[in-house]
Image 1 (cartoon, rainbow, N blue to C red):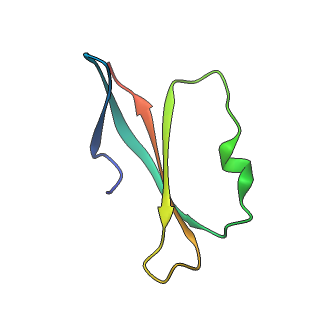
Image 2 (tube, helix red, strand yellow; image 1 turned 90 degrees about the vertical axis):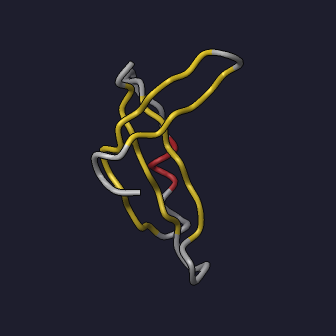
Length: 63
């Protein structure tokens, strides 16, 4: 994933499209990213290939 890419998330038959705003690599202790706010965003979190850090993809709702 890269900035500008699109992610589609489905809830039942409803589709939500998000545009990737940020891609980050952070340590596992970076829990600040889990805070919610008033914006419509999606946050995808997985491990980096070396399993030492987290790869975080944040997108903003477009539709």
